[in-house]
Image (cartoon, rainbow, N blue to C red):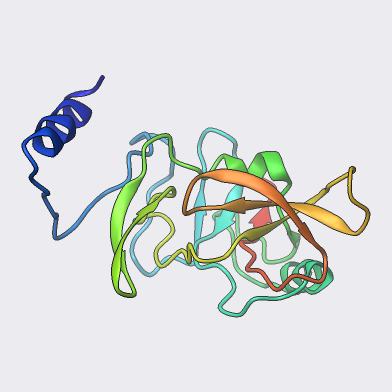
Length: 168
């Protein structure tokens, strides 16, 4: 058990709750390349993938998500602007933090399972599309939920968000 987990357990046992004004996810410090708050993309140094920092602002169906990413024109660190796509299930799961952080969303505190600095304003009340088909259910695809860090499946007609990726 980490020091943070021991502290949380001790506070919970005493009936106390501690709220932090700011929180940082526990993504390894060497996972992402250098970026500033205005950067539109970020590179995962472990996978080499380049990610869109801000996900789509509107939910969309599975096929619209593919069109959205295919039409995206953000410059990568290497200067490329084309070649954006919907990530595979395995790729999107690499953005899930091993330890969540707590954010105030709407009217309460929720756990968020992605790095808030690298991926600000990640909406956690909806799943995110992957390009991976769910083989047990026709017309379904794998999705990732950043409110709990788990994957699942949704019908391709569902209205979800997408975060696009670019190969190095």
